[in-house]
Amino acid sequence: MTYREAVIWAADKLSSAGIENETAESRFLLEFACHLDLNFYLLHQSEQMEEADELRFCTMVKLRCLRIPLQHLTGTQEFMGLPFCVNEHVLIPRQDTEILAEEALRILSAQSSKTDNVGNYELGQTGAAAESPDGTGSTICRVLDLCTGSGCIAVSLKAFCPEILVCGSDISADALKVAKRNAALNHVEVEMRESDLFSALDGPFFMIVSNPPYIPSGEIPQLMPEVRDHEPLLALDGENDGLAFYRRIIKESADYLLPGGWLLFEIGCDQGNAVSELMRMNGFIEIDVMPDLAGLDRVVKGRRKEDV
Image (cartoon, rainbow, N blue to C red; front, side):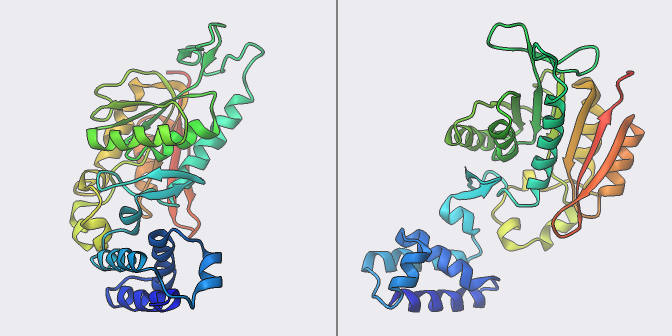
């Protein structure tokens, strides 16, 4: 086959398997399998493929037709402009989750502007939660990424805000192995700790961010095969109404969050009101719901009262 014939063949196979954006995926698989870029394809699309490249490409297309996620075939996914390794033990980072990371960074940036001339964060009476490793006695803002999975949020926060201390936690030891690889891949230091929510953690933190399991159990069978059959159920299932982990995290966070500190969640598009009310009932203030690029509710944030 020529390169162009390979893309046409693959697009037809993918379309027949029910996969959308079949032409774009075909080109991406071709580029990955043959180690080439779009410019090479455009200049050489009428040339015959090398036999080894053709075999590798056809094998990947057939696996994709089985609805194995594209990112599992390539082993990578970009998030916040950074590369991340992914496999069957972690959720594939999604663009919607960047809304959560961006809002966390916005709050951290605003907070850093409030530091005094010796670098101490103004985080209520207790101050920030960790002493600077430089021995100056200044304090450093601590951030927790609960249910870290691939570590995409934790690693991104540290990469774009290197002065903070970041801890990523997850109940899955296999997920934490991936998260540690991603921290190393992006050359940042993030503490990764195995923990059932807060059970093995020690606070306090200025900020807690979380993309917890939030899909109601009854909706799991209706998910796309790529998600339902290939991403970890542990990271998807939010129990009966999808709110089980929000209830636990909001209630338990009081013991780990500084007065005046922030709690931020990714949510399902129909959970904004419910999660906001849970936060309000537990004493949070300045609660706000933010949309994703499609205009759907995607992030809820709130601040712990300072007079607690």
